[in-house]
Length: 92
Image (cartoon, helix red, strand yellow):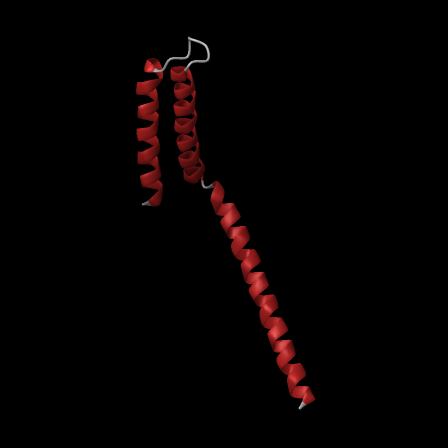
């Protein structure tokens, strides 16, 4: 269901982009409307890129790698705690 939501929102952003690009002004040099048009276009492309990034699943590999690292750190912490317990038992 998460992927479907991203596809819908990306489609809406693409539709907005195709509708608005002919109406944006880029011909007049460095004026306020041209700066607004460039900023709006940049934000629209950023939104589309973010949805496309999520749809393609680029984050999946990072998430799996981070989970693997977290499990390893948890295991190492458990080993340290178990080792200290054994050391404390020997001291008694």
